[in-house]
Image (tube, rainbow, N blue to C red; front, side, top):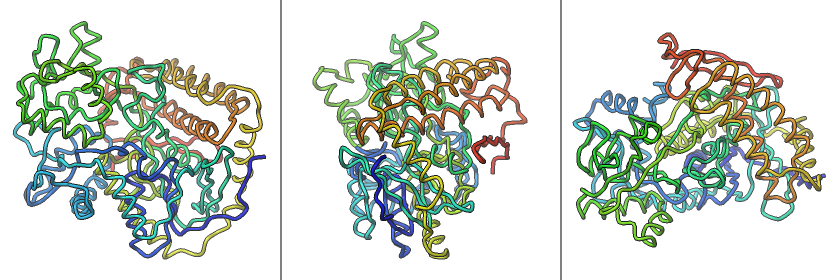
Amino acid sequence: MIRMDKKPLETDVLVVGGGIAGLMAAINAADQGVSVMIAEKANTKRSGSGATGNDHFCCYIPEIHGDDVAPIFHEYKNSLVGGYADDSLVRKFLEQAFDRVKDWDSWGISMRPTGKWEFIGHAFPGRPRIWLKYAGHNQKAILTAQAKKRGVRIENHMPVADVLVEDGKAIGAIAVSVRKNEPEIKIIRAKSVILATGSASRLYPPAPSPGMLFNTAFCPSCTGAAHGAAFRAGANLVNMEFPNRHAGPKFMARCGKATWIGVVADPHGKPVGPFVSKPTKELGDITADVWNTVFTDYMDSGRGPAYMDCSGTSEDDVQYMMWGLKSEGNTAMLDYMKKEGIDVRKHMVEFMQYEPHLIGRGIEIDLDGETRVPGLFAAGDPVGNFRADIAGAATYGWIAGGSAARRALNGKGLEKAEQSSMVEERVGLYGRFMKRDRGPDWREANVALQQLMKDYAGIQVRSETILQAGLKYFGNLKGKVLETMAAGNAHTLMRSLEVLDLMECAEAIFLTALERKETRAQHRRSDFPFTNPLLADKFLTVRKEKGSPVIEWRNRA
């Protein structure tokens, strides 16, 4: 049997994940006067997709944009993040995002590094700009310090594996301490639980280098833990059928394409988009946001590759871009470019489209950040009906933290989460993984899942027969994994649990892709090749009830 701490941990608000959303949730919850614990897989100072920095923060600032928020709402809806959000959540976000900007600026994250609020990149010519340029290289350390200042208890190297639900509401969680070679189960009693574990990477083979599981644009340890836990707990997942793909430098997967001050160009240096013909710091080149598949399309058509061309960028703007890439956390890429003598003023840099992953597709929340399971909240990248990346994580993390604290203050005492029937079931499963002295490990399971997703729920084509075949094979694979996967220590057990969460995501994708009988965006059905206007404002949700999936349609709110 796997070792288990017999004394449960207790807190009013449990925050699962110490990324941007988790830290902001913890800070606000603590400000409301409740006890708060963060359970983090790695270390809050360097974890998640914001680990090493960011440099764009979506927001509305009245003194810059004017008193009418409507044009900014319109720009958001037409941006790379605005396609799958409930309008009501967008409006609440826009109302509060500037407050979070001011918080960060006062705490020491430079939100106006040039001395003023400056909106740069991700922009259309002649239209309002909504992405504030900031210097976020120190954001995780500062937010961690702010949480500690408020007395937040931070448990690093202790990922949460499952949310415990009793009588329909969240009452705590099962965590696994991986600080030592031997894992230890921890049961946490909590009045409110906030899921903020980031996106879901490693679901499809890494496009830049299929043999290297961790060469992904977003944090490779963000593997749908929130999605999986929420799904098992009975919360709705929404918009799971829509693949999301980012783009950036080829082979070395790094986000930050809007930080580049150049023009997306063909091999002859000719711009491929209609928005800019020469580099502009203020706009960037929004072609890759609007034409999401441009780099793939150029290769498939034989016209490619497509490049980021900075040869016409001024020396001052090149230096500004290099500073921005450092703020974005792309220091490894900059070191590589320096070592190999890559000069953006002389060399066009080939870009590519990365593999699908889940960001802004996932857990359905209401205006307060709560799921359909009372006491269970979510914020940040795993939310499926709102997305604004770093700004969304900061703002809705704050909202969810305040909501969870209010629920804790108004609720009853802590319940005995350790008595939940789920504890015995899940701890038994983890123990079986550890007990086996032979069998496939998490890598084999992860690679098999990636191949299955690529071939049967991929981005080229989907159909009834392909998806049904994939769903059948998925069932076989899941059964095999549960029966044979082995983990020899705390680290490999953690990776094994990641694969189980990815499998929950995979099942939700197969089910919703089968249900959406149309072609929309990158959900391409060969048997339903048209886009059905009757489904334009319809969201598709899936949840588990007594172990069986329930799929429902609803209107965009």
